[in-house]
Amino acid sequence: MAILTDKVILTVAPTGAWPSKKDTPHIPLQPRDIADEVYACWNAGASVAHIHVRDDLDKSSMDFDKFKKTVEYIRASDCDIIINLTTSGQLGLADEARMKHIIALKPELASYDCGSMNWAHTTVFENSPMFLEKLGRVMQDNGIKPEIEIFDAGMVYNALYYLKKGILKAPLHFQFVLGAPGGMAATVENLVFLKSLIPVDSTWGALGIGSGHLPVMYTALAMGGHVRVGMEDNIYYSKGVLAKSNVDFIERTKRIVVDFNKHLATPNEARAILGLPIKN
Ligand code: ZN
Image (cartoon, protein in one colour):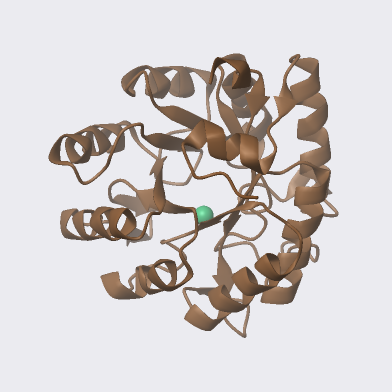
């Protein structure tokens, strides 16, 4: 594994649950568009695609058929990108509606949001203890690696609790999501602190939402972490300038990674780093 320490896993999150076509006309929201964008990002260097879907009206959704179509389009191409499906694409759903798609489609990764929080001072982003136990077991039974999303420090301690209980298995993979409204801010200090809490054999990545995007990316790279870009987190390429495509973020990240004397991991190198089976 030591030979892979100069490899950086770049995740693209092209869609997310919130940005609309009014926010940016360039965001892909329906299966064909999402799959085409993932393909272009993979061509440009992304090794993981974190996928959300929308309903026919482009609203946040956990619609099974939309996930199925999107995943089928990606898998029908020659693109070997690691598929990471969200389990939190729509608030207020029953537990089963957040797991049906991963059981059926068996992505290599899926998000595991390790605690509840007040979202945007308007609603509750609910991840109850019962749900997290169920989700952890479903992921183990289906060979899906949890990407443990951390919005707040207490969520790390939840993960350590589930590790002890056997609901999560080492080595853990964390994604620090900083700058979400209601969670920890996207600052260098917060990332340094959060990273200090996780087991040493863990892998981890980080992202900053909005203007914290670049500071968090530089910090993550400096600390040996992996990175995520995309319109789920940030629709602006620079102040006041919308990204024309998720590929814009991939191209910039590739330049930054090279400046750090590192390289973007291929999907199979990312699989090796994450302990996932290699694909031919
Ligand atoms: Zn997401």
